[in-house]
Length: 87
Length: 181
Image (tube, rainbow over all chains, first blue to last red; front, side, top):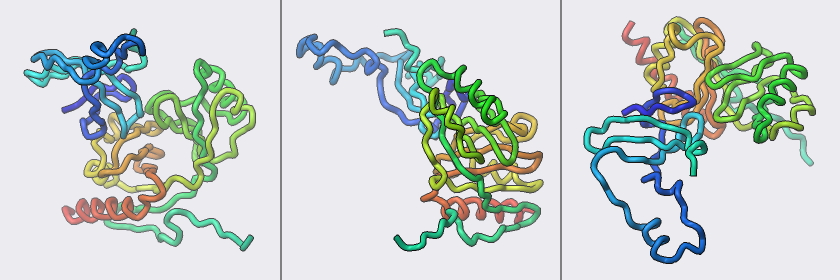
């Protein structure tokens, strides 16, 4: 599998560290309530198909990426810098 | 304080030649990571040009020449290798001395590309990776920096603590390529 780093170009997956669903980019407000925080921390929809994930380009430029990947076909659809994802 | 003697990471390592390729330690001089503050990339580029006469390296590129290089070293970071950084750079970027932190090797010879192909998961052939190109990638299992400094010469850098592992891994790849004749 190769991931298209916006800075380095397509790179082997060995260079990356996988963090998990990109929901971590969408942190609730501190006073959002325990239900919202419970969902943020623990509940993942696990939908088959296009899925946003966070990968760190550890062995490359060091940037965090939001990678969109199809969990059914394993197609890598694209990647953007996590810092450029509008929140 | 006692008399301290600086030692390079591979102090005493004699150049190793296997087949037509030579591996040797290189003294890069002072190494400084230059990380521009937010929004300061244009300013640091101008300061670097004024003070050291070389361009700010774009991602995947190295500028300057043998005695003084600026090597792209990651997101929003370059490594100034050679000169002591001019104080003017500190207005626009965080400067960190890295002189003792890196093992620096030259791999030189016609078979160098074939050797690196066994160690680095990036295409480093001359048709796509030319002089002045650089990557941050893996060397076997180690994070490193690889720069082409000549038609058949590469600069390989990994953390100092992995110096002998780097030599071991490169030597094995050199032997492997040479044995194929």
